[in-house]
Picture 1: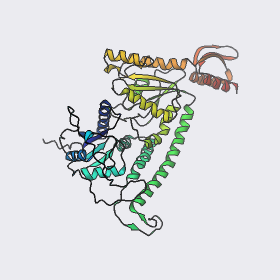
Picture 2: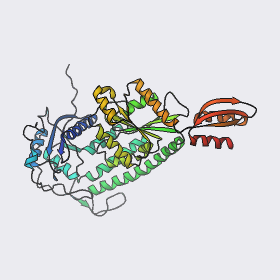
Picture 3: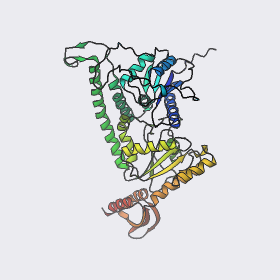
Length: 462
C-alpha cells in the first residue's frame, strides 16, 4: 500500500554570526530555532550562516550568501532592481541598496565546515534567527521565491496555535496583529478618492484601509482583554491571602513536569517549546495547612518579542504576586546559564526581581557525577533535582514548606461556641497544633503567617 502522507514543509534556517557571538552560542541559537520550527510543524532541511559585522540592510545576507541560499530554495538569488517603492506608515523602503560583501567573513574560514549542507529537497520556507524588517523579509522572498519568517514571527505563530484559554487567545491575537501590521503589503497601486461610512477616506490606499481595520481590531481586543483581565485580577485578589508559589523559567525547562509532580494535576507535558501558555493554579499535594498554591507560567525564550511580553503581562503577574518564585533551569542544557539570564531579564522587566526565589537545577538525571559536582560548586544555594525522581520532588516540597514555616508564628485563639462556624476558616488559614474546649469555647494553639493570624483575629473579634 502506497504511503500518501505528505512530508512537512521544508525550511532552511539562516543566521548571521555577529561580533561577540561565539560558535557555541551560534550553534545553540540555531538548535533552538530548529526546535521552534519543528514545533511549528516544519522540517529543517538545511542551515546557512555567515559572519558579518551587521545584518545586510537589503536582505540580511551578502550577495554571495544570498545566491547560496537561493540554491536551497530554487530562487534566483537576485533582488529585482525595478521594484516600485511602496509607501506605508511603519515600513521602510522595500529595496535597499546592497552594501558591499565582506569577503573576509562571508566564506568559511580554512578548516571550517561549510555553513550549509545540500538540502534533501528544496525549502519553501526561510526562517531567519533574527528580528528583521518588513523590507528585508520582502527582499529575501523575492530573491529566494520562498516564504520568509523571522524568529519573532515563528514564536508568535506558535503562541497562536497553542493558546487555549480565552485570555491567552486574546493576548496572542493582539501580539500577532502587532507583528503583522507593519508587514501589510500593497496589493495594487490605485487609490480611491471616495470616502463614506465604512469606506476609504480621501486618498486612502488599500494597505492603509487594511491597517485601519487592524488598528480597530486591536482596539477592540484591548477592551475585551481588559475585561477578562479584570476577572482574572479578581480571582488573584481572592487568592492573595493564600501562600503562593510560581514556577518560572525558560521554555521546556521542565516546569510543567514539576507542576504535575508537586500538585498531582494533569497538566500538559510535551517535549515542545511553549507547550504551556495558560497559567494553571493547583494546591500543593499532599496538602498542608495553611494551603500552598502552585502556579505554572508561560516559558521564556531568548529574543522573546516585546509585544508578547506586553500581551502576557497579566499572566506574568502571577510571578509578580507570588510569595516564592521557583526558577526552573534545564541543568543538562549547555546554554543553561544564558537561559537563566534570559529568565531573570524578563522578570526584571515586569518588576519581579524582589520576590523571594529558589533556584532549581532540573533534569539532573541527565548529568554525570562530575557535572553534578561542578554545578553544586557553581550554584551552592540551588536544589539539584529531577522532576522524575520522587525523592527529589519530596525534598523540594519540604523546602517550599520550610520557606513558609520560617515566617510563621504561634498564637492562642479562642473560638466561642457562637462562632464555631469559623473553625473551618481557622484550619484553612493556620495549622492547629492543639485544641481544647471549656465553657468559653475552643482554645486553639495555632501556627500561621502573621497576615493570616491577623485576619483570623479580626474575624473572631467581629
